[in-house]
Length: 468
Image 1 (cartoon, rainbow, N blue to C red):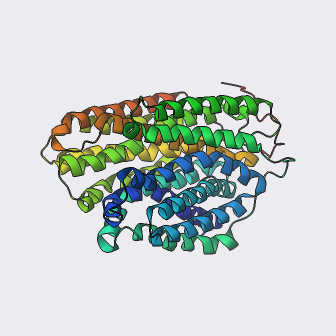
Image 2 (image 1 turned 45 degrees about the vertical axis):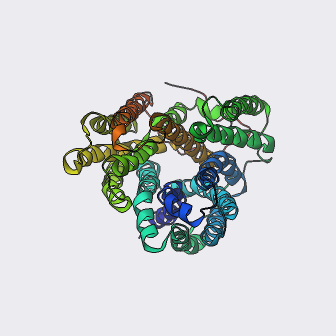
């Protein structure tokens, strides 16, 4: 196997592990409640929420640090941290230790995701980078969608602890070859460390935004906690932007967003509602159609399979015809699948005639959209900003996922029963609207000219908006 494919395989395996934990824990929640009956539902919810919030908050600072310190070094550190935290999660004897270990897990994941793609891209020629990004992105998408089915099987087999122990098998298989295979790269032109205060402001802003959205239904959307979290988040964002405009080594250079492909791709990733769609499918199959957890997870796997296949094809087509030509139909297909569920599902199960065709449409749409936006986000970045760029794109996608899931909770509340079918119809139509907005954003990508830009000084402006 050629070296570049081995690098892609090793780094993608670690990404699969990190993103698997975004969704795999959801399916184990009932088993966790049985293991910790004296803890409240609010306390147990932090097993889920802490990972998503810290992961979103830490992505960009981690990516910027990796560009400065070294991407290989940070990747290996991230995998090691994630593995140790997974072991602690699996042996945790109380909820407090489990939540703390989940926070450490999220920090490891925030190091793995941006560094992995930044290590892959230099291994591929420019004309093949969309394909490489497509395969890398598909790994994450499949991990997120595989979580419910894999988690259900592990919980049925040995209980909730094995949803964490399985990470050891995946992570060690990535860590051992990575040590001798990966090449170190960093921003050698950097003369100062990235702005630490700015990193704290950004992490706090993203973390508070995610917290307010995640807890909106539980605390109440008009509660002091939610409104205060949103307000403080907005203030921190404004302070971060102001500081970034003045600091010689900001965490995010404002000039990055003058690259249209980068800015538009992040908007598209934010709008794309695939995480909400996955959760909606799980709730619908178990709540409305009455499937057990394992059957529902198995029924959902067709989407990830077609997403992976579409990603391979879409990456090759994007290398030839451009990302816009792939992302636009991807968004439309995703929207069509969601609308089909919103208009045709009934209380009577109809997997083969209704759910399966819709899953095929959304799966193909997912497999086209995510890789197209992922490759568009980095196509015109210089090498010394690869990790930062991937981190920003991942952060936009993660915050979009949190917003999407918060919207789902706002529509469904504590539902999932047959009498709430109309709520699911409204939800699927809203997800379809997100697909249409994603396609509209893809139209604005314009013609992307992939380029291999040399590293630039950390404080130098990267590009001017030249052309479009």
